[in-house]
Amino acid sequence: MAKRSPLAGARILVTNDDGIHAPGLKVLQNIAKSLSDDVWVVAPESEQSAVAHALTLRRPVRLRKLAPRRYALDGTPTDCVLIAAHKLFKERRPDLVLSGVNDGGNLGEDVTYSGTVAAAMEGCLLGLRAIALSQQRNPRGEPRFAVAERHAPEVIGKLAGFDWGRDMLINVNFPACAPEDVRGVVACKQGSRDLGSAIVEGADPGGRPYLWIGSYQSDVTRARNTDLAAVARDAIAVTPLHLDLTHRAALKRLQTLFG
Image 1 (cartoon, rainbow, N blue to C red):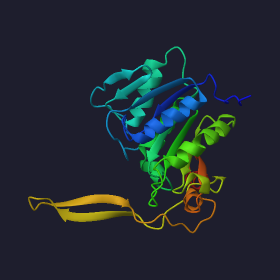
Image 2 (cartoon, helix red, strand yellow; image 1 turned 180 degrees about the horizontal axis):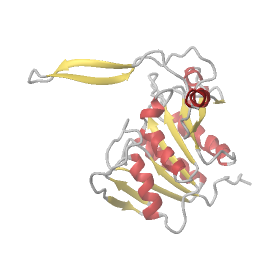
Image 3 (cartoon, one colour; image 1 turned 30 degrees about the horizontal axis):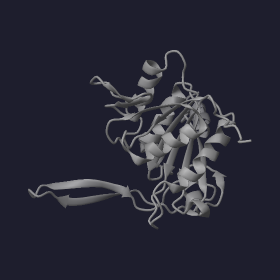
Image 4 (cartoon, one colour; image 1 turned 180 degrees about the vertical axis):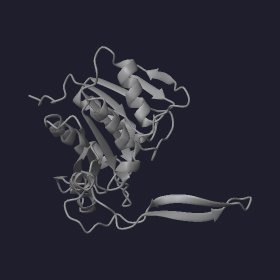
């Protein structure tokens, strides 16, 4: 007898920041459908990478139905989750928000920029359980989302049975290796890179100078038990992220200072 999915019958909302036509979104939709038969997709019309937790306030947004339970929104990932929750799910809210699978990792400081993580964060703010999923780009030639396709269903299934707090979301990063070479799943903290973003200078065809913000220059980290260290050794990184950004130790000192 086939094992019953822990999410059987659950309503799952799938979104991303790479856009409605992104290959990773299709991968995640198929993964969600392997876990439940009640899967909805609401994703941005176009790529919204690195928009973080942006919310569209200065213009209207338009929701376009592409197929049953599949919509595109001309807004941000945050807009997608917010609009879906208030417009599409009035009678029954989603049991789980899945954001991704992002084309590229969301590790270390990425979580502050990432639209993928922000979509899960918005779900969390709305009182929904939410998971962000990202796939490290593979320079060795394996299919782009092969690791996520193979391992995400089990990871999501285990997380579905885990009771995490209402003010938390889960950030999952899949390593850049062959699916059979994955070295386990590691629960770890957010890491920090050694170097910041690269700034590329150049000139356009008209000779006008420009600055182009590039990607991070290094994923190397000396700290153990971090998301960066986990994926560097071909493990799947699972990191709980907390919405409360208060620095507790500093708060106590400030209370003394201003007390």
